[in-house]
Length: 308
Image 1 (cartoon, rainbow, N blue to C red):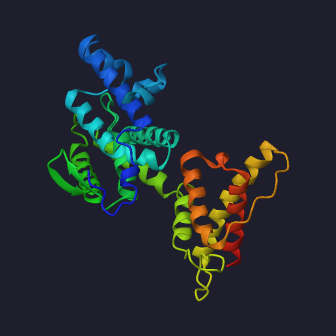
Image 2 (cartoon, one colour; image 1 turned 90 degrees about the vertical axis):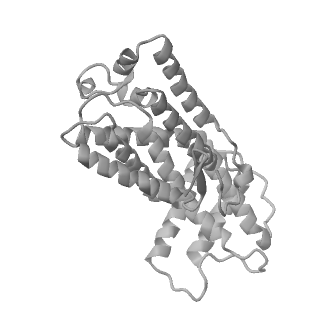
Image 3 (spheres, one colour; image 1 turned 180 degrees about the vertical axis):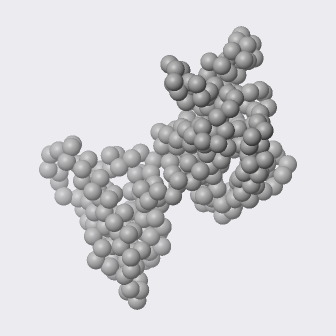
């Protein structure tokens, strides 16, 4: 894979914790399916059927993502997860990536219920397609060597999958097919909804605003130039910053720490760098991991953005 115009290429691990565990569970179930338990029995026990909603087999709404219809079905899904998952998990964290993965898998199941409802639903395709879409929304111009042979930009690869699955799904309606095209589209749709929620992008937006500020100026950094009027878009972004600060204050109230020694002030030219480190820490470890000094810096930046 080639990371075009990416600054974090050397920091991305080839494998990450959540991706490793997901692949391991899928491979372990496939091994049992191919050696100890008959494939039909494994799919019947872990795959999802509409009848499961009225029975005690409710767990299949989750387990269907970890059993596959055959070797190539498994190989394709795990290859795509290995190709796109680690960098996305590295950008978020293992917990956020796992929740996103399951969320997209549930989206695939919902679309299967709405548009297909026939047969046994198996495979991680819906969840993996959601991961592919999230990657494309983060790094659309990255180039991948698909199967080590075909060079493609990620955004065009995902677009091709969307078109192919949409056309194939419409053509198979009323006829039946061995491929859950609408489940794939459900994973893509739920991934898109997740990525478009303001809460999921507020930190990225704040990071972009801070990163664009000058580092060598003697005056405090400004998120909005003096010549630009305030508008509703700026007010909306300010509300997102306020939400982060409110979460920080709520966490501090629960901890109720002892009064600390006042921190040393940060020089203006170092504020941008310090703020980026704080945002990195929120993205990777969560807002509860911030120290008092980091929370104070976050609140000061929020006030300055509102004053501007």
